[in-house]
Amino acid sequence: MSPDPRGGANVVTLPETPGRRLRRRVLWIGGSVVAVIVALMLVLLYSPLLAVQTITVEGNKLVPTKTINASLAPLKGVPLPRIGPGRVKELLADQPPIQDVVVQAHAPGTLEVQIVEYAPVAVVKNDSKSYDLVDEEGRTLSTVKKRDSVKLPLIDARKSKQDPQVFASLTHVLAALPASALKKLDHASAQTVDSVELSLTNGQKVLWGSDERSGDKARVLTAFLKDKKQQGVGTFDVSTPDHPVTR
Image 1: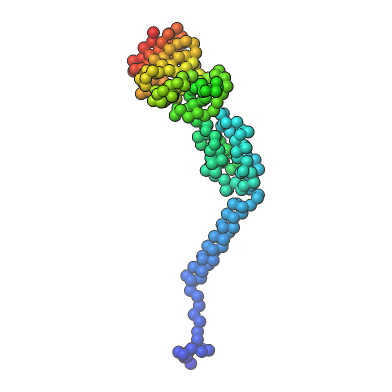
Image 2 (image 1 turned 30 degrees about the horizontal axis):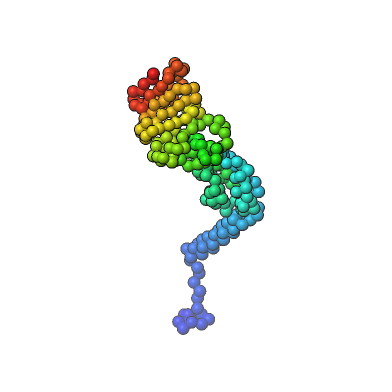
């Protein structure tokens, strides 16, 4: 007897094709994986098991570790995956010496913060009889009470007020010098942007000129300072770095 075309008890159910079974299985597995991933993310983001318990600070010289720890105190108890460099920088935004931070999380509860500070290149006497440490851009990074507490050249503070361009020329020149040369300088001065002069702690003078080609001039001066034969020289003229002169 042939099946009744109008339906009824004689309707035959066709078996599910292999392709359809495979698609249904893939969808089921995929949904399960997504659910597991979402659950895992929620655990990582909100679980107290990964809450910050210890904060270690490295790389800071100008900002005391105690001050940094106090600023980062709000991070205690926050799960590690929820803390990024942006949040750490936000908490340290009121510390002028800090340029950037590198953050690393160490499970189960340690946050490592590497501090990157601006490099001071000179000291400037301020109105309160103390000294400001300034960087290449003239930013005041911190303050010290004694001139000899840091081995950096002194810049006349009047230059920064009378002629900002001259002051900027001085800081740019000093930023080109390596730390080994900076610590040998006593002070830096200039009447114009083209007449930068440096004075070493041993009395020797350096005629620098403008801040153009400061990298080349710094290499020449560094070589002179390393050469023991130049110890009796009174003046180093590196204003033309291709043809330096000593006298």
